[in-house]
Image (cartoon, rainbow, N blue to C red):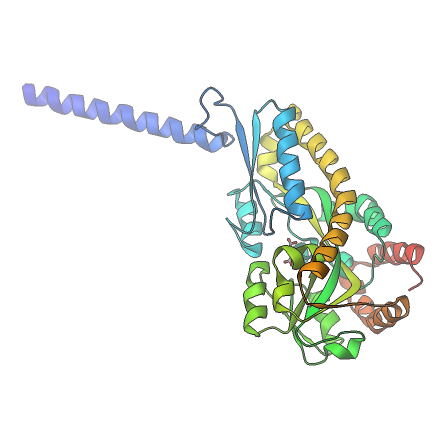
Length: 353
Ligand code: LMR
């Protein structure tokens, strides 16, 4: 009898534990992540925001500002945890991690979305947006709207665009003043068919590589050079391992701020409003501050390093733009005629290319 009671007790205890585990798992699956380290705020929602650049950059600072605004507006009920420098995921990994919901927010370079939505390539066309004003107009206008909608087909909610600045060219084999100066050089680019064609057009070899691999490969000499914004060249110290910098302003580097769509849908209307308002304020700040930051960091590079800096003249820029005109034609079909028409109009409005 004693043995029978013990077995019955064990069976009952086992059943109770299984029911509890089942309940608990089900509950966790359906609820938003919360930070249970924080006593008394069990309902706190945590948004993990991963990115690949340094903190002292337009994206790094915008992410921190956004986190602060969300904290203030939600009275600490929503916490944005920013993880910079690819500390969690590299460029490609972060896109997958977002789709799977391992992280809730990212802000990849618009270029990195071009395999997912080929329309994004419109922003990478050489000399497409030659002024600050043209960039802001394109991102905040019809073209930007079409692009954000185009990524909704995945588990992504496109929220806004942040800017970094104009791309420049650095190399160990300079100076670079005209298209033929890049002949035979191996350059790092963000993985993108448009960028690959752009450099093939000047007889260089362009290799799509992770951002955080670039310094090492420049230093070892496996790469001759790369294209990037001053902010990235400065914060990752590319100028230390390159002999020449050409201020060409030939392309744009900016970001699409994206949230995991399932996560977004589970937020209440009030929570979505807090996020939207915080993003709106951050975007306004970022879109004016980022260009100045690039200019200021160019002055720092001038002071701190021996890199030789060359500014293309307007006439030289026009020659590069003409040289790259075939790239526009080649991607017309893939990007779509309507979007191309809008981009051509924007370019005409802001330049004489
Ligand atoms: C790059 O890969 O060069 C950039 O996308 C890095 C960044 O996010 O600014």
